[in-house]
Image (tube, rainbow, N blue to C red; front, side, top):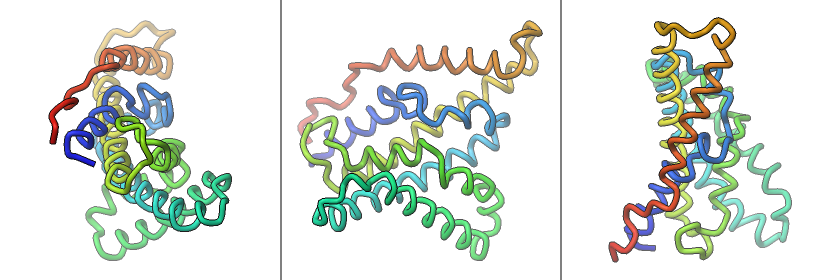
Length: 206
C-alpha cells in the first residue's frame, strides 16, 4: 500500500468519516466529559493511543485467530474483552511508571474501556479498505486506528472550546446546558459534511 493511499485513508478518517461528527459514534464525551479544554485534550490523547493499539491488536487477532477458526461472528465480543484488558494494563503501567502522564490520561482510561468509539475503531480495522476497496492490510489498520483517534480528539477539542465560549454568551435559558451543546454538535456535524467527497491526496502516485 503506497503512501498516497495511507494519507488519503488518514484524511478520510479524520474529516469525511469522522467517528463522532460523521458516524455519530461516541457522542457522549462531547456532551458530558469534555467541559474543559484540558479534559478534552486528555480524553483525546488517551483515545488516540487506545484506538491505535486496539486497532492493531484487533487486526492481528482477526487474522491469526478468528479467521482460521471461522469465528468472525465473535469479533465484537473478543474485541471488547481485548480492549478492556488493554486499557486496564495501560492504566497500571502509567500509574506505576509515568505518574505525571497518568494524571493527565488516567481518569479517562476506564471510560474508554467500554467506549463505543474505541470498539468501532477496532471493528473498522478489519473491514475492507475504503480507499483501495481491498482487504485491510496491517499498516492501513494502524493508520485507521490512529487517524480515527485524531478525528475523535479534534471533535472533543472543538466541542470543549465551543462549550467554554458559550459559558460567556447570552444563551436563552431554555437552551442552557445540554440543549445548546446538542445544537453545537449538530452544527459541527453539518460543517464536517463539507468534507464529503474531498480527496486531498488522491492521485499522488506515491
